[in-house]
Length: 277
Image 1: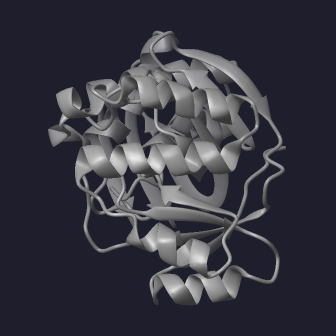
Image 2: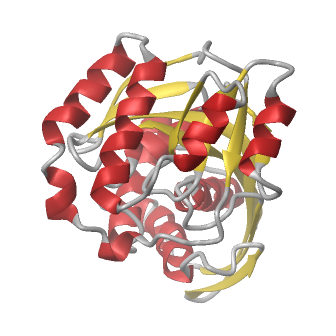
């Protein structure tokens, strides 16, 4: 019994930690997983290209799917990814989606997308890789386009095509930021501004929403706006901290992606917006 699953990365328009509601956009950076199910119990994990992703997350995803169908199997899981880990580019949400999909494929079973997203959220909290369950990140990764979610209520509020831009340039600093030691009380102080950022995004004012969100989380987490300023100066349409950083995502017009990437440094990634299927 073998299966394969694939999911995408995503970038943030509005982070859900401060106010519970989030908005994210799918990005064509891929994570894959292969699951083989054999008699026995337990999960054996081989991380290829995801050396810093917690194996506990992968194990819990497989176990959650097996428990849903009241099955006992031993699983051998292999995963790999193009998504830089612990930079705010949704590597954990994508990994969880890919492993859940691969396990379902191995079982020749299906689940509604919202159930996959809810399972992803529960497992992400349980594995300690997310504060809110990151339903917005999981939804953008699985479905593509731009998504709006209420992470506390585990509700997908809206999903649609993202028309601001079809390309994104991502600055990927070497520093990693883990979810385990975030200053939650400090972030919570920005609740009213985060609500306003979500309102702006909901009304299609993505540039303002992204800028405000970046200022909120920059202040809360001690991250500066220098990379965003460089991107905007080089011609980006919108730019801001993705997730809890330190990666910075900048949406660009066709023809300016190289100029923006050069302004952001040699490690910048140019990727397509993932609109889904």
